Image 1 (cartoon, rainbow, N blue to C red):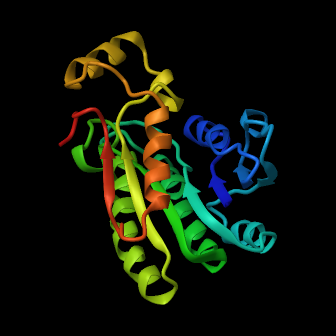
Image 2: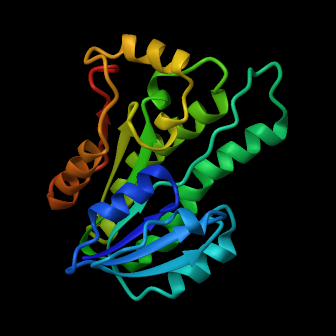
Length: 229
């Protein structure tokens, strides 16, 4: 398979790169500022692109270098937490751009490269549906990703027979989940019915199921250990 992981330098993106590092795969991996954090493949052929997915020109140029794709996984994102009363416009705008505009631009140009019966998976967050104090910009962006996914999925199904879905992740032992303080970590674990963070292998299992399906359309699948049901 030809797989694009947009945002491969993050924790989840790096894990997915390892998961698809197979001889039969060709990987296209992107980063914005942290090339050193991209997992170096050992089996799959891979090409690395520097791309700021908030900039239309860079996104268009990146996709112009790719002939075709079977799977596109959008994993870009950032956080800048603050209360609304203290949040400045730049904190709002930068998170909306990094988490939502990036998905729009990646899908806009990426859909032209996806083969029939191919897949696009947008990575969202449990917070997109539960909310969180001090993270309204992040929550709004992820809620936007989920709403965008549903509408875009219908467009792609009718025009190109490409399957578009989203995964809303809970808390995992990867990426941002490893950066929480012990205090916050323990508070969150107490709220999770399973009382533990998920292992990244669970993400890989779900991604592989989605790309094996020819009937899953426009769904936001929650993977969170029962934190949100």
